[in-house]
Length: 417
Image (cartoon, rainbow, N blue to C red; front, side):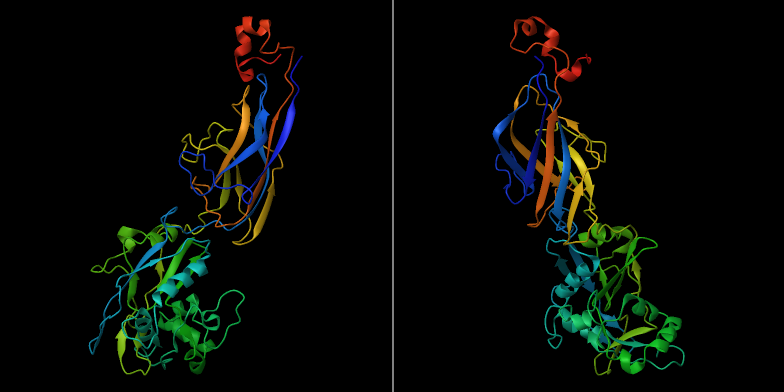
């Protein structure tokens, strides 16, 4: 009698399943589910598995020095010199190495984290980056060229913990809101300065603040652009600037002795808050990354079922992993997404004539890098099924099967009857 077919659904949940302890090299993100009772796959079955649906919170870390090597930034401040005076940098840790904690960041959140670690201490205390930035960035625009009246010194450095100064989505601007990237860009030319002054009065501008670093994504070129406050630039061996933002180590990032970034000393000069000293190079010119940004390190979730699926080929053509589906992420960070396969893709399982006792699974991004959900939830439904055997093949224990060698071959090696 032919073996009957069967369809079995299995629910996988990161809340109910702990990290696998029976793997040879357990890692965060590998999971194991014990099946009770175990599933018996008939000898003549042609079992397959498919992912039917998944639900997850988009909490996957896109910045991680361990997983992506994209979390460190080295910032170096140079002495500011004019014919009249020299401002000697006296900040601790110069260059300053900034390491972002693992997390799911938007571009503006990366900007805030960089600023928080640059802004180390009270601006009134000498020897801190906050003191340096506050003195380096009191902006005077327009008074070194032409006959235009200068804006004079603006208020000073914006603090990322003060929403009214920092601004951003959902925050109501105040009179102290930091200058935008576009406004800083306009102030780098006399023509831009004249245009800006038509819309912003001097008294209004002098209440504004500036960010230690201002970042923008240019949608036309798909490149990151940066304006850095102070006579400061990012230097080599910065994984964040290279891997996350696309800056080239050799052509765009200098060192403590080699300057690569450009500054405009004609239109942007810095002074103390009282306006008693002036120094060139208050802000960098727009620095545009050479390569496309990779801040979206997790654009898709790939599900792997090792033990069920023997192997799959990755984006490089290498036989690795056990991927059954790749699901594009379509929601912003922190939001939940549900996805259901319109036409499930069934992948053969090499388990005919045996038992399924555990389901091992893990998630990667589109590059095959293991994902960190940071405690976020993930649920999935997979389906294991096999159709009824065709024809009248004798059971494997029968004399007919033992004397017919063709019957010991796997079913997919035999012609359909």
